Image (cartoon, rainbow, N blue to C red; front, side, top):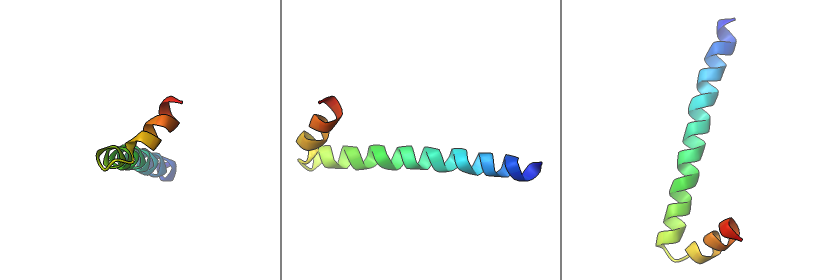
Length: 44
C-alpha cells in the first residue's frame, strides 16, 4: 500500500521537525537565562 509508505515518510519528517523544534526551544531557554530550570529538570 503506497498510502502507508507516504504516511511513514510524513511521520519521519514530522518527528524530525519536532526534535529540532524541541532542541531549539531548549537552547533558547538556556541562552536567555531560563536554562537553570531546564538543566535542573533534565539532569535532576
